[in-house]
Length: 334
Image (cartoon, rainbow, N blue to C red):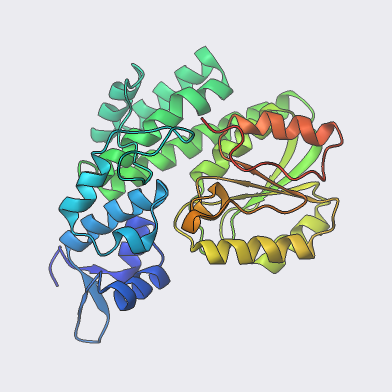
């Protein structure tokens, strides 16, 4: 077994694309095209993993699988090289959304934090984040400190400049700092409604965005109850009832099939009582309105918050008694 041969579970963790997605693409598009080992298990080489990373990046930007999976790597790179547009800007001449592949002007702290990460200096990186927290506060740490570094880490990983373990090291340091800040915030002042239950549905393993959202909710004085990731739907319903949650908040990335996202949310909305609001966050196609050109999912009692800055507005709406109104998807996105 060579170092360039990857099991399907490793590819899933590396790219964020589920095993089911990889198998469906293999049947439908002929890519990826893994070899088989002695016991018949799929094995993927480095070139396929790199191409899958770029595909994931384009999916996050709103491209459909049918548009991009059959394309060779150079075509994927060309798509990412197109001029960037904002969410509300006209499309480029290709008529398709484009990918923001890098920060236009990274804030001054990004380069030193990235250098600490590349030196594997977890203590130094944690100290830098804690100093930023003391100087600027938790809201700015989440929004202005961590968010641009997330972008840089993702881009460096995509280009092969960061190893998987380095990305995991970064995520662990961020989680340590944010969890400590949450604990201190909770001890400093009593929580107020709404009581918010946070988790992800099965198949969604991304937790960092959920933790960042929890910080923004706690800053609004909300009581938060975090279950971690990949909670079965029936358990989400049971937990919401047992914990008397006012809001069920779910994080989504582009890793999940839009059809599965819609099915999960429809099932949860049907099983939750009307007074229990369903909040979603993230850049999932099914929620952002990029899935096959259709609008994002809309249902009564469901609000989608595309950005962290949408959370204070969502809390204010809930406290004003506006629990039942459907929130326009992407209304506040820039």
